[in-house]
Image (cartoon, rainbow, N blue to C red; front, side, top):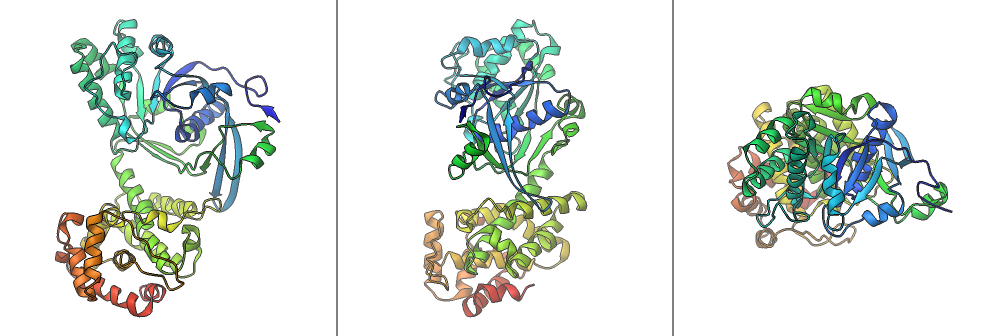
Length: 479
């Protein structure tokens, strides 16, 4: 078996046009895979310089393989099983700014440089008032980026054609807005002057993005088989699902510079990220939250098995297509395609997604993912969505604890305050008391849900049915 490097594998040399803060599995399986596709299918012709955003990271491993690695995509694509391996060669080099600060800052002097992409975790876009302009480097990611932008402004004497296009991928709603605000805070803190501020405003663009791809990461279970297949000793293989979506809140002229659509990729440049954020939360996270307790209490442990079950599969379809989809404002065909893709992802034959792993903090999840849909459905249709209400009754039942019909232990997990409340309510043995107590808990919902017409009675009805008939039989009554 060969070592993986530029001597044993082909590595194309391309101009360095992208600075990437972050070297983790997600960026390598998502952003760098997208750039690889653009390089191979369009005239994009760009390579990536990776910057390690914190002191300890993986760049030594990357450099040891000359920044070459394979992406293993797995899943269903229009019903066909895919299990592919692709050699990604777009990273030209990887830098640690804590030990290679000069090389890091020199990235600002490269006239070809055009894009900055990051994923420094949700905590990465934060303002640290202790950062100084002369730090080598600033400790925060926005601090490092501001240092780089200021150096570029000075190197090119404020030339507006040398601005950078910045795409943060951190999982924060409106991440671009947050990053831009934080850069302004550093401009003020470090007194970088109005000319630089104007250059940043007019020459650079910081755009909010929404990213979506499940990336399990390094395939420990399959690595020996993968290496045997590749005949390379690749220690940076990264496994991901085949589905990918990148929504970028930016004008069409930015799309022309980043021609992902020409490479046939699911990258959308849109005026507002908000409806796509709402679509993902509603049609992917929303069904997850209610299918989990319904499936688990019906004796099903894996999301895929729930989708393929003759009763629970119909329940999931009802919640997604007949209830939650009716509450969104994007074109119907687009929503149906997205929901179909979500079901294909839930059915991924390579991922055993345990429903209990989704059950953590179910009440706060229901509050953000399902409750808005429940209210909108009631407003638009004049009746409550039975599938979503049954999902809430299933969560309440799951939090009772005890044992499942097959003897499996039910172990709910949430904030102590919620756990104590449910224990106290279920101890009364009265389902009306339970329903009223949960729906009236303002510390969960920030309101009293007993005021939603008909909700309390419907929850009580479902709780009674689940107690007397069991979960599966209760589901059958609403299909």
